[in-house]
Length: 496
Ligand code: BG6
Image 1 (cartoon, rainbow, N blue to C red):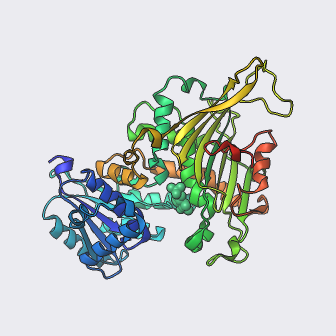
Image 2: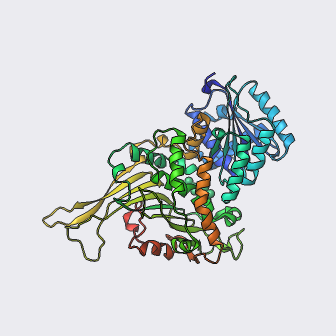
């Protein structure tokens, strides 16, 4: 039986939660409409709420109408809804796994692949994986050829020790090839394009190193504040919520060595090597190279402790100790309640070694940069210098740019969860994080979290909601005569 002709079931743990309605069902529905799901495909929701399958279908339709109306193809929905099923159960109770197993076997009526999706709160990851193992529900077979895969949502651990412990539990039950740890940033089209940009063009790779690059900036700014997630967020903070996963993954993609192939493990090996080469920071360096800040008004939000020290913004200066990157700072920043939503990577090249042209004395020597815009307008800009027309030799900076939306039809840019679900069903783990990759990222973040709890912590500063963050973050670059660039946005906002 070929993979696509084998019946496939996706079991969603935490099926009544936000993620299922917001991301999973719209992603699956889109795959269904494009004909990418196996012919015999079932989605089984599993949660404590006592819903029937019909109620599950109604709730998912209501979710589509409210959260993804532009994707709701009303003609196709009834056909898709026939694939949706639900059985109630408690993910921590062994007897409920027996009920689930019976439900699945009756539904499948024979050999079937299974994708278990853990869309629950993180404290359920361990019991679910253990129970699945004890119930014998993750054993794969060659004849008939069926696979068992488990998708694990973030956060994977809340520090290095808990991530290692969770990996241990996962590996007691599953082989690494069965595990798909999600980081939705990896499925953003521009992130994948970074690989193509770097390794399918000969002109960039030779200059992608300390000889030509002055520094790298990675910005993931969000305009939203913590909203209704304050209870979770106050325990987590920006380092766990955004840096350990998304920003570390972006850093790995930008800095890794060329993999020998596009095989998942070839790419993941290189990413892990890059993360492991990040220089560990001593507490004194953490005080100098990291900025932590909280937006004004955060501590009055529902669910936040009045004296909360949780950072909603962080900026880090990191170094990668290898031949390619020695001495090149990587500046990373992310925060909530900032002036705009943008995710971008700036590769700032060095100044020309000798400036023959006259430039105003109060202006810095212009230097090229490349800006990768991950969102909202996916694409990239290349900043170069040109001569303005006229007798005088006057320089002008201009951007050569490319935007996905101008070149490709919007339907050609799938949403991140759609891509990830498709890949997990296809058995392609390239865009999922391997166990050692998760631990390598925690290895960088853990000492910073510890130092931030100690007397050596940098001061917790504040910033105004709707700004670019605290002044201290500007000083982090300013001390070396550098500045944050807002490259993908209107240049009019630069420097503000
Ligand atoms: C999630 C974080 O992983 O990423 C959220 O938990 C954050 O706090 C979100 O808002 C940002 O994702 P995106 O795709 O909107 O940039």
